[in-house]
Amino acid sequence: MKEKVESRVRGDLSARFGGECLETYRVKTRKGAGCLAYGQIASAKIPLSRMISPQLYWVMTGNDFTLDINNPEEPKILCVGNNPDRQNIYGAALGLYNSRIVKLINKKGMLKSGVIIDELPTIYFKGLDNLIATARSNKVAVCLGFQDFSQLERDYGKPEAAVVMNTVGNIFSGQVVGSTAKTLSERFGKVLQQRQSMSINRNDVSHSINTQMDSLIPASKISTLTQGNFVGAVCDNINERIEQKIFHAEIVVDSEAVNAEMAAYEPIPILSKIKDKATMDAAIQKNYEQVKQDVREIVLREKARLLINESHNS
Image: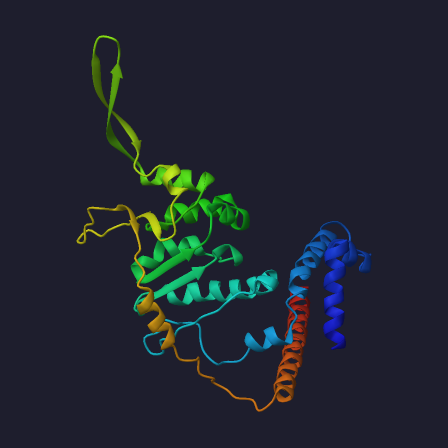
């Protein structure tokens, strides 16, 4: 508990007063580039110190399963969730899992699989644009859900958000407003529409008909969609042509069938049982201390290796 409090306090002080100031004050002998590098390392410690949690260490250690979820020998379903109250903490852990999963599943000879992410801006998914561009050939479907394009631009940056938005082939959208509705309307394209006008004066009535290019689905229509109504676009294959690629439709939900399905849900099975909370807390704390000891040993081994290499080079 003492070490945990110390780590939390150090992280809070770094966040409040600036990691560079604290660490460079501690090590006064560092100057120039060395001082700058040490300050950058100190800044990285700020978010990492918030991840110091025995419970998080417990979840992220062990060899219960591997992340190659579409392995033909051991297929599996991995479901992870974020916590809005600790989004900045768990987002880094989930990002680590995601970046590793991308490298393992995006290969030839694996089973068909899907990567489904809801509320994408709440986590950072490194390599997402590359996954969308290359995963289709490896039978990996990528489904991303978020409220608005502006959220993606805020959390991923405009260049990366633009790549993600322009790489996806299928789009399904409910009611959105502002620039997102305008962007979608432009993506759906325009169509040649015929308009008829009528003018009445004292002597006669005249009709005129003209054609002009107009938005297939205007932004005003997208911004006023009711619940259950969607607009979108789909892509096709060479041997599987789709004539109607742009759509504006309503999803009819069978409430009775949905309720019947939910009533038949079974609880998630418990894979390991621990007799009481005290035993669980003791196991989690022991695992936490073991991880810290393993890290100390890794640091000592690396220091020894660097000293040996330095002596050989000199």
